[in-house]
Amino acid sequence: MSGPPGVGIMVCAGCGQVTPWTPWDRCSQECFDMPRATPQEQQAAIEAAPAAYAYFMSHAPGEEIDEGLT
Image 1 (tube, rainbow, N blue to C red):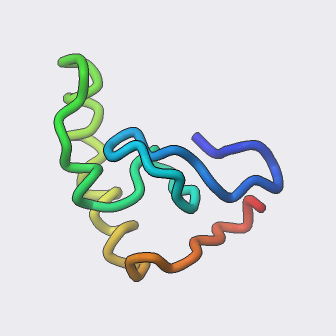
Image 2: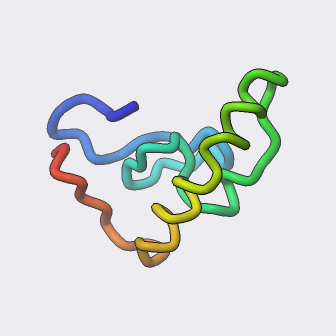
């Protein structure tokens, strides 16, 4: 799920903005909660929701997120 080494940005799969990298392909909880394109993707998001919620709640909006991957 991470980007290339040394690249700490991504395009959010929810809103399409270039944002700091997150492990969820979404820039925020709001974008994470957006519907997915397929039932399989939606089910995967439902299953990942508790971990994603914890992740987004532990990072302030707009905060540069460095998980040691850059």
